[in-house]
Length: 142
Image 1 (cartoon, rainbow, N blue to C red):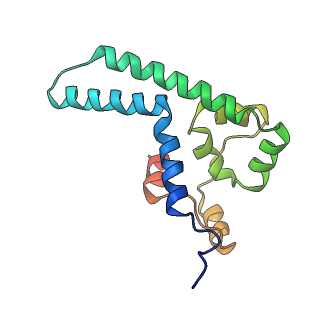
Image 2: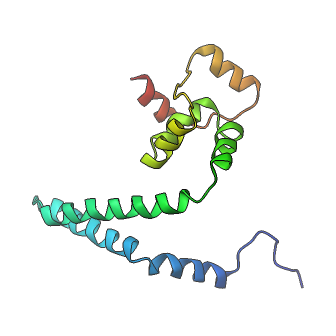
């Protein structure tokens, strides 16, 4: 009998992880509100109360994420930005959320994207995979 592969999660574990996600009341309520808004939009109506609640939920998510992400020491954030991100990736990271934007500012990182031919050729020669899609490059260049 073959043993299960080392990195493969068991079905039971996947179900437990899935159940944990479903238990988060913020996630569950956000999904409900989004469905309400989609139904209203499909009927050509506006649901101001649901929009307001969605903004509140987003603020709650942001506070929760900031609390979790804020636990990492500044030295770890410095290492992440220095060793795991290319300069062109920093823009994508900082546009993800306010916390990452503030972290980038706190660490004194310049947010510049270099899309010159020379830089793209250098990335190609170094065999680093370009981390952005063609659509992302079009968006930046427009």
